[in-house]
Length: 115
Image (cartoon, rainbow, N blue to C red; front, side, top):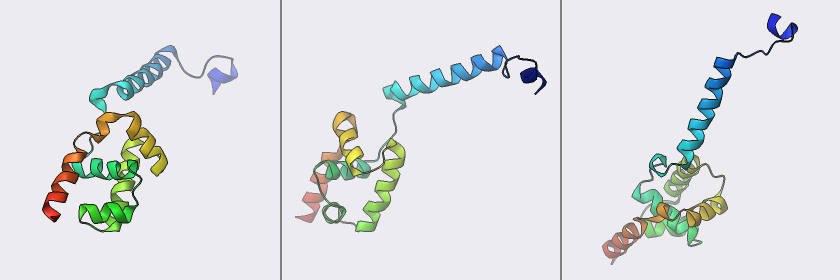
């Protein structure tokens, strides 16, 4: 308080440098593909269903599970990817093709098992 009252900055140069470096590292981590979030094959399959325009009920049927399980997975996926809803998820996954890799294998396996 005394520093501020006397017109000095409230944060010293060392602390300011620490804050700037923390933000820089966070920005680099977001852009680095090695730090991307890990999605399970089931999560990828659900994302694929969303990008195909399927409803939760249809995805659940195709994956052999309940609609509530799909809703639970979607909440986790939204949190992991930092999206708010299905539209953002679909746009994000279409932009980042690496998300959908391996998801087709899950669908193919489920179709073979259900045949």
